[in-house]
Each structure stands twice: as C-alpha cells, then as structure tokens.
Length: 211
Length: 333
Picture (cartoon, rainbow over the protein chains, first blue to last red):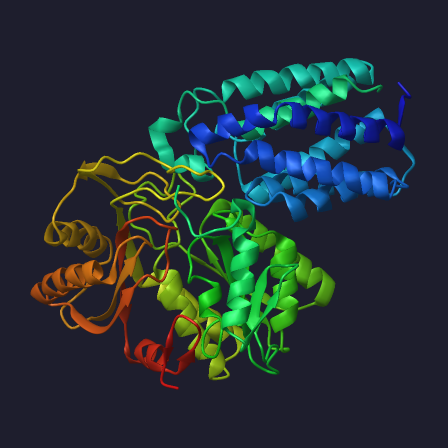
C-alpha cells in the first residue's frame, strides 16, 4: 500500500470532529452531569470552535503545524482535565507528523499511537479506569491491525471507529478510578464516560472525511 | 437563585476588577486573570504561585501579598485555570530564584499546572517545583480514586511556605517546608446546604432541611455519607475523630487548629464549633498552639465548615507567626 493523506484532508477531519462535538454538545454535558461536573460538552465545543477559528485565521502549512495548532488551542481554552488530555493528544500527533505536507497511512497510525502515549503520560490512565483511554487504545490497536493486514486506510479507520464505539459502550458498567468521577465510587457504575464518547466522535469524524 | 451579580458570565471578570479597585497594592492581569504583588518580581526571592477554580475566595487571590503568595491564577468558577495563566504568572514572579507552584489535588488542576511547568521550563528555563496538597481524610479509598483532595491545608501551606520564601530560603528549602506542612495536616468538612454555581442557577445537589452531608469537598462533590442534622458538639466530633484516626497526635504535640467556613455559615456559628473542637482536643491532650477561625477556603454560598489540624514544631510555628500582609490574612506588620 502506498496511500497518502494530505494536510488538507487531515484538516477536513479536524473540522468534521468540531462539527460533531458541536452537534453532541448537550449530550456530552449530560453524560458529564451524571458523573462529573457537567461541563465536558460545553468545554470541548468551546475548544474546538477556537481551534477551527485558529485554522481559519492561519491555514497550517504542514501536517505537524495543523495538529500542534489544534492541541495548543485546546490546552489554552478548554480547562479542566479535558484540556490537557485532548490538547496533549493533538500536540503529540503534531510532533509525530513533523513538518511534512503529506503523510502515509502508516504515519497516521504512528501519530495516533503517539497521541495515545501522550494521553497515558498525562493522565496515567489504564484500561478499565473508565476514561477516554478505554475508547482510544482499542481504536489505535484496530487501525494498526488493519494496516498490518494490508487493508486500505479507509477500511482501517472504519475498524478504528467501530473499536472506539465498542470501547465507549464498555465504559458504562465500569467503576471510575480517575478524575472527579472516581469520588463517586459505585455510583459511577451505569454511566457512559463522556471522554470516551468524545473519542468515538473523533474516529467517527475520520470515517466521514475523504481519506 | 439570589446573588449579588450582574451577569453570571461576568462574575470572575468583575470580581477581579473589584479586587484591583479595593487593593491598590496588588496588580491584576485581566487577560490572564492573575492577581499578583505590586512589587513582583522580587529579585532573589523564590516566587510562589497558586491558583484554581474561582468560588473559593479568599483562596487564592486574597492571599497574595507580603509573606504569602506572589501571584494567584483564577479559573472559571470551580474550573481549573489553563496552563497559559500559570505560565504567565510564573514569568511575572520569577526573580531568578525559581518558582513554587502550590496545587490542590484535583485532576484538572494537577494536569494544567504540570503543563504550565513544562512550558515554563521550555520557554524561559525557569526552575519550577510543584507541591500538591491532599489533606482531605473524607476520601478513604485513595488507591482507586484520584486521591485525597486538597482543601484547608492549602491555606496554612501558602502562609507558611510564603514566610519561608520571604526569609530568603532557596526553592528546594521552600518546597521542603511546603511538603512538610502537607504531610502533617489533615482536614474534614461538612455541608449543611448545597452551593449554587452562578452559571448553573440552581443548587448543585439537594439536601433536606434536616440533613447534612459529611465529608464534602469544596465543589459540592458528594461526601462520605448523608446524616440527620446534628448539634455543633456532635459535628465537631464527626470532623475531628476521623482526622485523629488518620494522623495520630501524641501527648505533647502542638497543632494549628483551623475552623473554616464554607461560605454560607456565619462566624458566630464557627466560634460555637471552635469551642467544641477546643474541648475535644484538650480532652485528648492535643495542645492548640495557634488557631484560625473564619471563611478562608469556601465553596461559594455553601453552609457548613471544615476542620483542619496541622501538627507543628517550633520552626513551623515561627513561620506561621512571621509577618503577612494580604487582603485576607494580615498580622505582624
């Protein structure tokens, strides 16, 4: 396979993600109200709107610049735990891509893996803690596996999206061990994690973009 | 909701304008929402900054001044500030001796301060050391949670570490003093009512007229358990006993006893509670070396209080007694 993804396509993905976050803003906030502090949807929406505005103002010259810009904007505007976590995710992706105009499917998988590693370093979450990790890790694994089997990128992203959705749903019965939800103990069981839900939207956005 | 505000969205911005007008000895960076000392940076002095969500006033902005904090970053109500704010504050107060970040143990605060410290190191080469407070004994299962929350000890730590910095100690020494304070302090709180976040417009949780929530944090998070409303005497025991179980005091140990109002409880009731705490501790052979009574780390308009006990030696006591001149704490000047 010698597929290439351009900065323009990756930017379309980011913009599609911002649209999905805006559409699901109230839903994400509702999920957060049950086990957190009822601001995940509004905070992520504010951050992604700011990220899109920043991309409008200064179109990124390289793939690395695109994700670095998104990450920095999220860190500066989201606050709470989501700002550093999603911000670090995109910053690490930007660092992984570097100053290139286009990348390979493999480069994208490597960048997502770097983003995941960043989330783990920042949040110290493990599988089963009921966090964004529980949707992100399986989706990165699924993309790696698909590309490893010779699947085209679009099919790999569909597999990643499906894995993220399964991971998101699996957070429902989990007992939260990180963040403010962890203070609820048993009372956190039976609620879907808002961060994992946002990760599923990110992968959904990827499958709706022209990769 | 009955609040003395203009627009719920402008509460933090307008409060900062009020602080600036009321305290000309302080400066305010309105863009970054930072309150800082008028004479910052002080050459050769370790800078100390803190910050967190708004709604806990006077923490942290009311503790900026001589002998305490050099700067405080204000987040939105109950929301951590972002790294840009702590980075800007670090630059404002760095007089060449490095900067101590005082962080309450909440996931968002810890991560945002951590990123700010990384950015400060990368951008300016400033040396930053962070000390996280986690004194809330109400969180029992700290292995499987985000850990104990930072509450009342934060106030005492900011005062004592601030005095150490004012004496000209270096960054490692000031950080060591701060860690000692956190290690020797424990807190426990009770809510008699919920609080109302201005932007939400309604109480964060429901609590019946005849109920109280024991073991609350400072954001209206759930506590250890809900109980029938009790007398001050019983409440004093419910707050002090878990602290003593967690941090055993031996005979001659002296403590700073801090009875803190959560925002909606009048001072007269805090003194009624202090009287009970005093009797309890005296009965247990714990010597109260110093006391602090009043609303210093609040949860908006929540009625209720917290008790913090800090085990002190002569050195910590002399730092506690050292001069301080801030909007909310002022003595020895």
